[in-house]
Image 1 (spheres, one colour):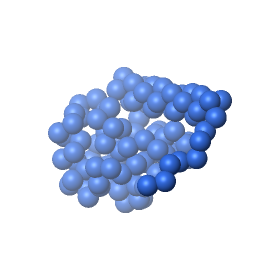
Image 2 (cartoon, rainbow, N blue to C red):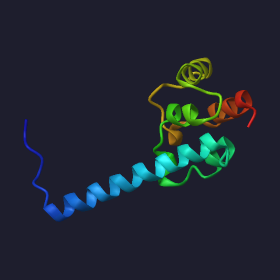
Image 3 (spheres, helix red, strand yellow):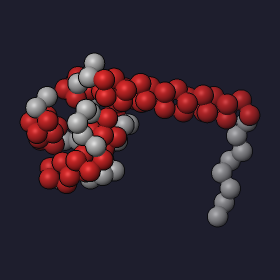
Length: 104
């Protein structure tokens, strides 16, 4: 297997900083969802944001009050959403079904 091209220390540091910032933003969004200051509808309305687009739907649902790992997976199974689906990959019908089920 060929080795990836070498990367400079400066480029590596930039990539690490960018990844850390993305993780911080995702954690902040999940915390807002958990506290109720941000709703699923608002999240879907802002889904053109790069950070939101790349969040996994399962992680978003698990962050909602009253939904844990089991209920979130069960809900996704009932609607027909894969466990690995990201927000940007949700179709209009899947979004509507999630909002209808969660009363958002």
